[in-house]
Length: 143
Picture 1 (spheres, rainbow, N blue to C red):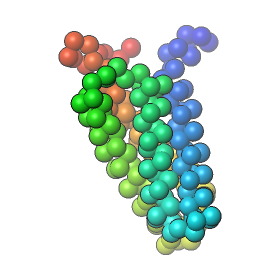
Picture 2: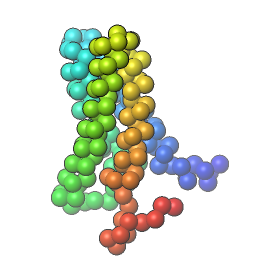
Picture 3: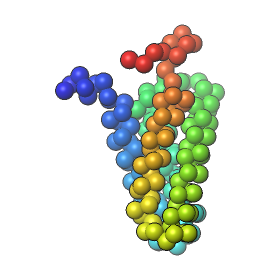
């Protein structure tokens, strides 16, 4: 069991922090849409930005253990992270717009379902593009 936990540690941490990110996303969305009475799209965008900042910090430090210490490398990493999240953020907005605004489905259920798709796409992008492990300038092989 310990071997399995170690082998899948990154995935387990990613799912945990992805869940935390989803909760933050939904809470910010709820506050924005219900308390502040902002539109669905505006609330989704605001929730997305807060969730992306939280996700970057937790992914960088806790999940993928980025060793970049130079400002330029961190900014490049953050730029790639935001770019990938922007693509999945657009997916989130489109899903919310189509299913909530156009079809009238219940927004919080759609928000959770949309976030499941977004988490999966973000993991793939983070693992393969953003937080690649390097050894002497070459990508390390997966273990």
